[in-house]
Length: 156
Image (cartoon, rainbow, N blue to C red; front, top):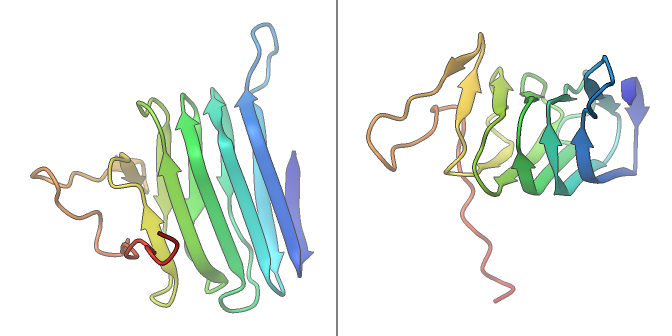
């Protein structure tokens, strides 16, 4: 499934379930969400899993702070989840992984300082070119360009 430079506005893309390569099929599963958000665009993924596939969220240029991505209750059982952070279109991103992480979560570039970024504290994050971020001591911060948003407890 490929969204190649699709211009979006007031769109919600919702993907749940398993993304996997079945035995006996030659090509990997490839999901490329390369959107160019001209207006509010949300991408919701989960609950679900990625196994031996390639999932990419690589937004093209778009309106400032128009892209909101939430990957929740998601198992990274193999393959690679790539998020490109370069563009100013990022408003918010949340990545919440469950279970043991087998696949690779790769963040390419730096999110804009205005973006709300919340990456699972237990996630193993790789930066380009494929270098694993080593936080050093337990509980240390992720790379300085990934900031955490405090949990919203207003619904408690």
